[in-house]
Image 1 (cartoon, protein in one colour):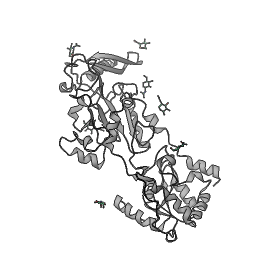
Image 2 (cartoon, helix red, strand yellow):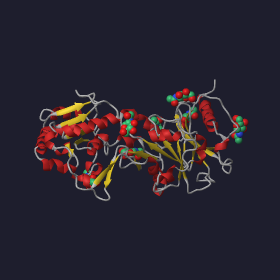
Image 3 (cartoon, helix red, strand yellow):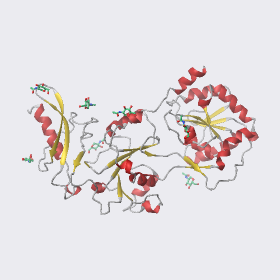
Image 4 (cartoon, helix red, strand yellow):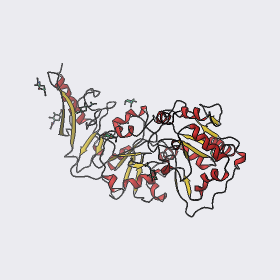
Length: 432
Ligand SMILES: *[C@@H]1O[C@H](CO)[C@@H](O)[C@H](O)[C@H]1NC(C)=O
Ligand SMILES: *[C@@H]1O[C@H](CO)[C@@H](O)[C@H](O)[C@H]1NC(C)=O
Ligand SMILES: *[C@@H]1O[C@H](CO)[C@@H](O)[C@H](O)[C@H]1NC(C)=O
Ligand SMILES: *[C@@H]1O[C@H](CO)[C@@H](O)[C@H](O)[C@H]1NC(C)=O
Ligand SMILES: *[C@@H]1O[C@H](CO)[C@@H](O)[C@H](O)[C@H]1NC(C)=O
Ligand SMILES: *[C@@H]1O[C@H](CO)[C@@H](O)[C@H](O)[C@H]1NC(C)=O
Ligand SMILES: *[C@@H]1O[C@H](CO)[C@@H](O)[C@H](O)[C@H]1NC(C)=O
């Protein structure tokens, strides 16, 4: 029976020696690889302490041992982290700080876990994909290469992670590598896995304006050049015989939007489609478009109530009505002056109560000029459905500030910035 101390020690050595695959290594660096090792060691009296050491790689030793020992890793400050028996090494290679490309001006991104969009799924199926994808797209920068081939690990400047659980980390992390994590959702309880990304991810790519690389997965707007003709209403207000429509399928949403909607429905007619309502619009993007086309003839306003109140968070619930002749009524954590064109939405936060909002909506309903003033922006601005993710990545990889960014705080940052007590506060303040 080996003592606890010996056991832990053996683990350290075992970790330091697992799965170095020689062809990943640079020839000029292979002699002076050092590995940072951090582990807890327990001495005979049962006291624990952390140990950090730099060790020279001993590539001859192979010790068969249980790597599930929880005393190593799962700690923000750990260099090693255990997850499903896999460990990452951070290799220091003093002779080289850059990836071994033939052309150092080319940035290579390895998609380690697939960003699950139709475009990327399709692209992955193309053999030797990635060499000229950036040039073809007329991106602002096109000196980027993309690969899905994990055997090209050493050549990658950037690794892209997209997933909802801790990934199988690369066994080796070279010093020249920057990790990017991409996420489309807003914070939810199911994101606790992001703590495994702390101290690993250099660049956070998501909807937040304070993320490192901004993702516009639902839409954005831009100035029309040249300007369009002034907007001519298509659907007469007199024929829009109903007031408000919404499509809602998550009934117990964290934002508590249902409370607001119930109160609003006491003062003005509200039709709710989807699982949380009595009406049904078949699910699927094309069907949604068909429904929106129908809605704009019959309804005046559209409920763009988000399922959570988080900074900067808006979804297609905002961009769908803006595409048609419907005024969005918004409830969300975003600054709508930034996410939507000027004078294009009605914000619940501007009203003391649902009753006051209903009063204003009824006023607009009787006033063509006021009602259609909410569409005047269409002369000045156009909507974009999303962004070219490849161009965005290549631009980011060329940004000298982003290139220097160290891995850091991720999960705390991610979970900050949501405020799902907004409705409670609105009720308290407005006395409803
Ligand atoms: C165990 O470690 C603690 C703290 O590091 C130390 O005070 C103690 O003397 C050690 N015990 C033995 C038996 O080495
Ligand atoms: C490397 O590991 C082998 C096997 O465990 C051992 O015999 C050898 O002494 C080690 N070499 C060094 C330099 O630590
Ligand atoms: C991580 O390590 C620090 C410093 O050694 C320690 O105080 C902390 O409790 C550890 N956290 C976890 C979750 O193990
Ligand atoms: C853990 O590893 C085993 C064997 O490599 C694999 O079959 C399993 O899917 C992994 N589990 C997770 C959660 O990654
Ligand atoms: C949706 O509409 C587009 C454009 O009309 C069409 O190309 C596509 O095949 C349709 N998709 C489905 C699932 O019907
Ligand atoms: C909201 O965005 C607008 C336009 O970008 C900006 O002028 C304003 O200061 C922002 N408001 C807040 C509270 O951040
Ligand atoms: C991480 O970020 C959050 C939110 O920005 C902040 O509250 C927290 O203090 C940060 N933690 C560390 C260790 O920097």
